[in-house]
Every structure is written in structure tokens, then in C-alpha cells.
Image (tube, rainbow, N blue to C red; front, side, top):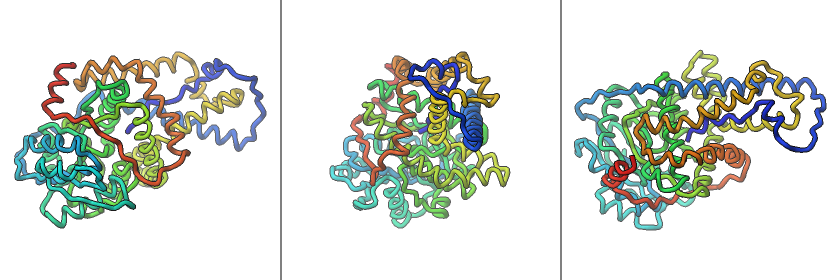
Length: 442
């Protein structure tokens, strides 16, 4: 999940207002000062990047051509103990406005202890059961699924992946068919939220999703950069998957595969008009656990891909790969920002000697930045016709947004779980119920 637009407030005027004990300003050796200079400039340049990218989300550049259905899809649903919600997704898939002979629904019942397999089979899906207590998690389940499906049923043009708690817009496969037909090999659909008004957590989580959709993923697509797979609502050409394999098993297998494919020269295309609806957790503690897992996955992907993507971008003069290195830099950016803020508090006499940072140290600048920051959710709601009622949670948005900062520190430096942890989904809802609720709460 995208977590930029979170630049910590680093103005010298602001730092001076923080109460605390008297601070001593010892002289620092020149290597330390030089390192601080470099880190400050890295922070400034990345901040400018996160400010400029959203501007490209003010328009919608999308493939709108509707062509005759010709692509054959395998809809793959990895499911771990999802008996309460998986049938709703299968019914949603069966109602897709696409010839039923051109797609099959496969459910991978992965290490299930409940009735997921029975519920999926009763709803009409083809079910594959997998039990492996050692290699647990969505990445492993998908790797197994792609191999089994290919062996059992060849001839698919692409695989579409949904999470078991999702619902899907009827036109989803038509959009993906147009992209696959024109030669796109990895496509990420727009992820919406099916329960944005349940609690303040689902509401603020939904706003962050809508902001990311329009002002990050769509914006990067408009500029010609690669988007990022989001774990659900994604479509991968079968020939590409057979060519480079899946083989990604981190906590953010979607981001990892994005970078793996980009290293092979294939970028991810954003499809803003292919929509699926994801369930968001209702409590802050559950949100914290889920997002901490994402941060841990992002950190592992950064360790593997940050420097290779940056070097390819610089050595080959490739904006595509250079921007990809910026994408995986996100967790490091938050760590860097808060570290510089701490230096500014402890050693204000040594801080912000660079001209750019000095000019950005006034309170009015950071106030304007904060205003823009919290105006983005309202703009996303209006531009993409999300439920207006969600805006009642806007005062809580800063709480959710800024929680990414301590969460990143905990995720990167805290204890790392040995296995993927399951996020429980309970919000059973048919697609017709979703439409009714949306109409009622506009």
C-alpha cells in the first residue's frame, strides 16, 4: 500500500518550538556533516518527487476501447479459512459481463481448517486444496496454483487474481481483455473498498486507497511509469508467467513480482476502469498488524531491488527503472525523514545548512503542504465518485496516515514473524448489496 505524502515536518522554526531539556551543540566532524548533507538532499529530492507525481492524477488517461471478447482467463482465488466470504466473490465472478466459456474460477484452498473448499465448490468454483504447513502464505499458494492449473487445463491467455473477500465489477474482464489483446502483459485493476463506512479505520483506510489509486498509481501510469501490483485485481499474461515463473514468496509478493517482471523488461499497466472491491479491517490493531506485514515485505524487496533498479536507471538512462527504485525506496524515506527530524531536534545548530532546506523551513510552507495532504482524500472521493459519507472520517485521516511512521520503524527493525499471518474477513456482502449501500450513502 502506498505511503508517500508523509514527509515529516522538518522546518527549523517548527523544531525550535518543541519543548525539552537544554540541548548542547557539539561540533561534528566533517565526514558526519558531509553525510548529513547527502541525506538531506536525498530527502529533499524524494520529497519533490512525491509532491509532483500526484499532479498527473488530475486527468484520467485510460484504455476505453471495448473489443470483442477473445481472451480466455483463469480467475485464481487463493483462500485461507475464507468460508464466510468466498461464495460472494464466486457469485460476483459468475455474474461478469463476459462469455462464461472464456473464463473459469479456481479457488486454492490453502491450509484451510474450515469449510472454504466446500463453500467454494458449492458456489460453482473449481477447487484445488493445498496443505503445506512449512511454506505458508499467499505467494506460495499462487506458485502452487499456477503450476496445477497449467497442468490441469492449458489454453488460458491470462490469469486474474482476486482475494477471497473481494467483489468484482461486471465489466472487469472486458477491460482486461482489451489490455491483453493490445499486448499488455501485466495489468493492475483499481482496488476500491466494499465497507468504507463501517468504522473510522475502514473509512480512513479507504481514503488512503482512493488517494493511492488516483494520485499515485493512475498518476504514474499517465506519466508512462510502471504501476505496482496490489495483490488483488491483477492480471498477468500466461505466456509471461510461464516464461519467468512466479517464484515470489515475500510478505509483499505483489511488489516483488512487479520488480521481477520489470527487471525482465515488462512494466505493470494501470487499469483505472477495471474495479474490484476489497474488504478493509475494522480495528486499528488489525490494521497495524496487516500494514506491519506490508512494511516488512517492502523492506525485503528494497534490499533486493533498490540498488539494481537505481543502477540500471542511471547506467542505461532509463526513467522507468529509476522511478522503480524510487517506488521501493518508500520505507527508507520514512526512516530517513524521522532520523533527520531527530537530528534537527538534538543538534539544531548543525541542521539544515543546505539552501533548499533553509528555504523550506518556514511554517507557512509546511502548513500549505499539510493542507494539500488532507485535501487529496476529498478530491479522490469526488473525482472517483466514492461514498461521500466517508468524509465524516476525514478528521481522523491524519491519525491513520501518520501511523505509517512508527509502524515503519517497528516493521523494519522489530521482530519479524516466521510465517505469513492471516487477516480475518467477515464482511459477507453480495455485489447487489454493495450497489445498494453505495447508492444509499452517496
